[in-house]
Image (cartoon, rainbow, N blue to C red):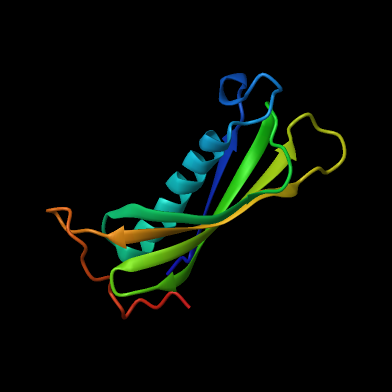
Length: 128
């Protein structure tokens, strides 16, 4: 069972503020999307976001950067799944290797049934 999902995104000018830095909300949205992939893959059913915590923006993300988002399930509860998401930035302009950790945080998702109610996650599919 895959415990990790990875996705690549490019930062475009419309994703940035007047200084050319990515909006925090844009980055959080990417983290939530990628984190939900890992959680839904683990739950094998739809999930919804219930909490975002401990997000730290370590270095600026700029227009033109390529982002690699790595999401990993770190804890599974009865209906909830905690996912750690790391965002690495890379200068797309070539030159020397510039890959670095830009942002990280944890997000919590809850598995839901067809009526949108919390539903248990299969415990036999351990995340550890």
